[in-house]
Image 1 (cartoon, one colour):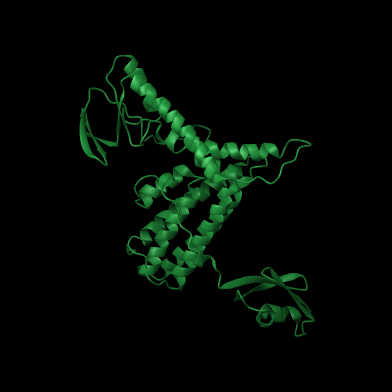
Image 2 (spheres, one colour):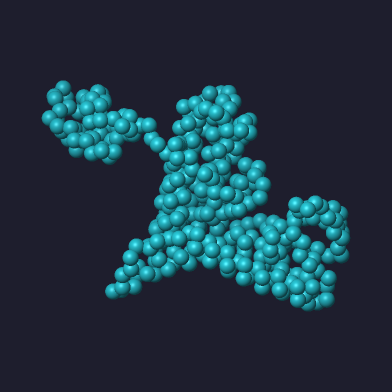
Length: 376
């Protein structure tokens, strides 16, 4: 039996009950496959927490304090459930004398497989084989989209405490965005093939801008996941996807291979992008992780990327500028600029000069980090 997920171990146990000598080959350290170890149980732990929070806010006449999410405790509870179920499966296998061999299998002949693991390779001969792994998604008639598309739409449409209003247009938009993610990751991976193995000592302006966008998105999505604000996470992922697309467009316009620092940054950005959307779109993420980025193992088991705090510091800010209550443009100033510098930069804008019609500004109101209002 190649594959120890729900389909594999149930078929193996049935074969053993019929008197067959059975061996299960499973790449996970315990039986249960992706469902138990990666997908179903871990996902349900988060969904259950979100449901409890939502239900607590809907009880008439009862109020609770603001919920505090302890991700470590949730993970510990999830691990305990996985361990309990894994022990149960191991006991069922032992009682039926079903052997379990950890590793990945490939056919050596019509009646033999080669199982590879950290301990080496082993040749297994068999009379009959059942492949219960590597299934491919199919489109169900009348349901043209996959699970990731539905999950993306539901999570991005509303916060957990609100009902989702199904929209065909919204689902189509989710499907288009997923296709765009696939193209972006593949293009960034191609651009990063020539990237140096080690992190460059310095980064040029384009590479630094992209790295700031990547680590900023990583920081915001990490915070959003901890708070179960998945709709906010997906909004940040959309924004970062746009920034990555802009970086790739600039790289293409040079009509030459990207510089080593930019190539390295493009690959880093693609890896971060896949990891931050993997909790919401796991199937797409696994495809991108292995097929596009050439990574080994599962993205769901990979270490979460580390945020570089220095990249979260903004050197400049862009403020919208209004004249007499109507937006006329934007001004970019140093993040530490004082009011005199901001006022001078605003009054130098052609759009502001035209709106004032040659008159002097009577007042300039600056809302720090937010907006500039000019009164003519």
